[in-house]
Image (cartoon, rainbow, N blue to C red):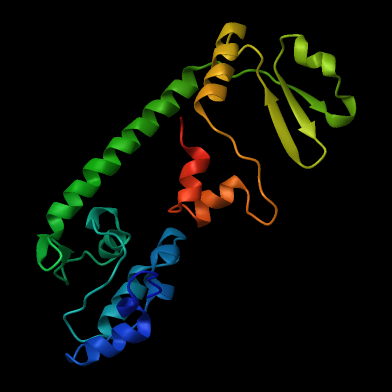
Length: 219
């Protein structure tokens, strides 16, 4: 509804275009969009109420081309009680669409999510076996530069509600020097210009710009 590339997909333009073919359009992103779904604010009653308010069939738009990556699959799970039939429509070419059965999409989704869930469980198991370091907490008022050189692990509490975890033996001195040399030789750093957002702002707001590519590309 707020497409920056295709003006024909703006809410009002889309509504007018579909009306010519006898198709109604209602924006429901505030009720069943990605943000409400991820925040856990969408229930089966919400989805069923939306479907009941429309004349069948109903087409739910989403911004992901691959249906197994879209939040709509979670909406379907909320009403997958046999009362509805679902099919996914995706572009096969620029002028041709194809239909994919929901069972096939669900299988792809579960295979991919299952892989990451397994990796997460293995990571948790490894962390449980790893001995937890006992960190000495050092308040900023007690900080002494000499603590950085005694080889012990610390949690330094800075004055602006920030903690720095200090693990001096995480890697050897030779490994640390090698890592520093690799970063300095492979990464090009830019100083921030006045009036330009910091580097993390480019990542989130201008991730498709050439400037972002220049900031983070290795050379």
